[in-house]
Image (cartoon, rainbow, N blue to C red; front, side, top):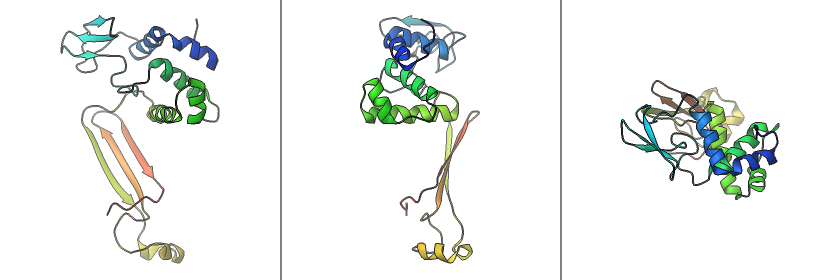
Length: 190
């Protein structure tokens, strides 16, 4: 079967766990399987567990390791149609719609949707790895520079996190950078 063109074709195509597994292997390691731990190219495949064992570092790994699918009890037969649905949705898609289409709970669909959106935003299905530096700051103006209506909204003056936007930055050494801005008024951490 060629690549799925409709949701029904995607569900049927990825329903076979072997096809879904091979599809992700081909997508992730198009030049051949590489150990995510040491980068080794020599390995043996354990067919019963669908894992590889690196001959250099002796670690076992699966196709899910280091991706958004890692540590998820949800099978690739559910993940891949969900990715297909989100990628092909014209105006976005809700977790309720994914839950109905795939036969999972809304909570599971929300979890999947959240991880897939993070992967689409970063442009990769790989997680941060190695040394990751994280820092946060609170961004907001001084009280004396605010409009009178804003001053009345504030409960107190001075420094603090009340009514300020939280900006979190993540930096993977020699890798990707991510900035998250929370514009909503969150609880104070004081």
